[in-house]
Image (cartoon, rainbow, N blue to C red):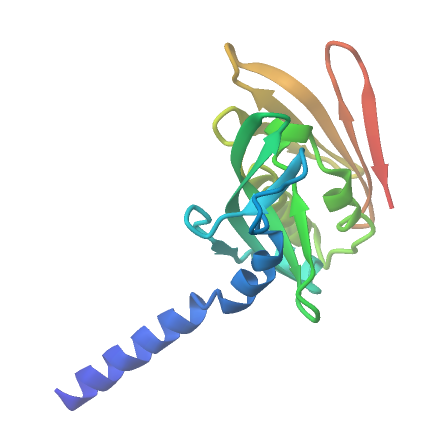
Length: 204
């Protein structure tokens, strides 16, 4: 009986430790709308009543972004008079608590700021690179799973190709993604609109 109680206590302690969100909550306080209710248009703000903070743990992604702790949380804001609410990817600098808020794809497209953080990283193996690719897709879809999805991921020697689908009104390929690879290192990423042929290229 004593052993059972002790084991239960250890498990509960471990669970509580894993869910400790004190530091991220403290950092997010800086994103709250001030007491006067004033705000800037087109910015995201923290509301603890709806935040639903979730810590993100990925086997490879957390190694690539070792300087940051990763979270997703619901933020709100205003675009003119229109209120916006969405789950967003949050990167918290481990040493000083500074935050980087990554807009969801539905709101402002693929984040070049976020992608530049992973370009140039050398992976230990092809298998590690492939696992990372799917982890990257997961976090890039944060806040956008209602109408965006990555499909048709194809790995070859020098590149990875992915289709980013949009399901608003009808499902269609919204962007054609190509990730340039050289010796298990990501060198660039391109995102092409298949209709207009407009291309975004992200390099280090």
